[in-house]
Length: 612
Ligand SMILES: Nc1ncnc2c1ncn2[C@@H]1O[C@H](COP(=O)(O)OS(=O)(=O)O)[C@@H](OP(=O)(O)O)[C@H]1O
Ligand SMILES: Nc1ncnc2c1ncn2[C@@H]1O[C@H](COP(=O)(O)OP(=O)(O)O)[C@@H](O)[C@H]1O
Image 1: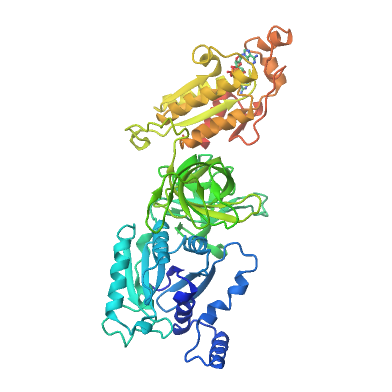
Image 2: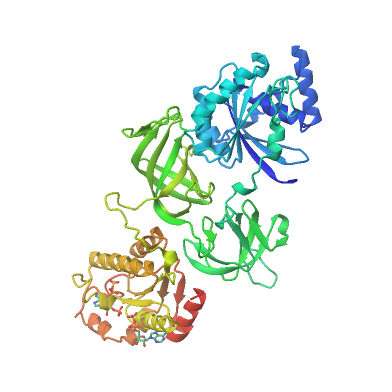
């Protein structure tokens, strides 16, 4: 087990002896720097204390934390020959929900301190509930100050029984009880001589041996991109790499991957660890950078995943939110800035389902507000499509924080329950056949450009090739759709918008069925094309925008249908490029220019790059 790391969250107020306990762990495991130790012993003896006041060790650092650090959690590191430890130490005043939630979101184990004289209090229940809500896999209840109840086994048993009764209502799998005296060191690092009736391990013994390797999500490969590295190479080539921390599963050189939300397929070519050492694989928790086979456009906040195992991509989600702000409350309709891993978006609260009383676990469905330290279940709408997992499946990709846009303060943390269908009155009928049952995964290839630019010609060629390969593909051509589905629409701006919206919806259905939808539509408006993309993202469907960038002069020279001539002659009004605008795509997946060759070359290039 040597070398692995245990992340510990501590819960309890200063009075419960939390600082003393952490101090004791550091002190008895000889992890304190000698100069600090001497200072503490000196101060304690000056005060006439019988033993070193270990709270001084952690309390002394409090001032440093209070210097404008939004999240008031300090991390202590210590190690023994068995393991390394990180303790998230948060002061136990009124902000305990915030501190615990922020300090505990990556914890493997939570230590809850109970004062043996006071027993299970409201805040013990609150901390236990938060630990279970946060999905901390292991819970250790330290019944502290046993020296003040004469090391009574009876008292200890009472507390264990009381806590066990409450914990039965929670979703915690591994609860461990240890009777301790942090002040005197009983059962903290060394087994207590005064509590012979307790036969279990000491706290440190437990921390050293608790099995955590199987707690991680080793299945769903998730690599949220934290930043893009662009080394300037002497040979003039610029090979980009993407840096971040693997948030689930693993990545290996040679893995086929897709980058979300774009949906481009490519392959992992190289992986580097810290310090630039090349390696063949990386797994959850590793900070690495990754080079991909294709020069695809990936930015901070995108996520690299395996093609057959994707997170949810969507804008509406259901989450449990813990509210931290002392100065304002949270209500329906409020907007915030959301940070979800490395991705950011504006978000609004679309509905409050219930507020939870953490002491009784009672759900108050009539509540429409959250105050400091309150927890509620709600639906949120994100401005950008987000990639996420359910929190119980992945604590990193399933959690977020909310930031007050006016003050920049972190005001809430949330755990995602599930994606939600957009309109609460119309429930998306998921159907019995899921994507995994279908032979192929569909995609929409959306060609946009002026009339005569070559959209239909390229789309027809794409369709021909795909069908020849045995892949279901279908051409959705603007002209054709305007004969049926869109027969009621003309060429006003509004009609074009509706035309694009309907076509996007139809394309997404084809794509969901496993077909490749080839859309050939002038689609002159950027906002509507973005909406088409979002319609797909919300259903986790790949969408690729192809800008057929043939200059107006060329299109007019080709004039395959004689429409430009008519438009110039004033016989057709609102003709795109003549007297109706075309908004050029800014970041399409592909830009096609006349110099790129004939339709066959272009179709070949697109399919190759998409790995189809
Ligand atoms: N006023 C005007 N402006 C542009 N195009 C016109 C117009 N009137 C008729 N046409 C013919 O309709 C085709 C474009 O329809 P779309 O559905 O692709 O247009 S849009 O996306 O709604 O803008 C377009 O087909 P393509 O040439 O294949 O693009 C034209 O043939
Ligand atoms: N890459 C290309 N190079 C040269 N000519 C092309 C190319 N693509 C299309 N064309 C020609 O230009 C015209 C484009 O018409 P079409 O494909 O119907 O355009 P759109 O669907 O964009 O209106 C056709 O006559 C086609 O043969």
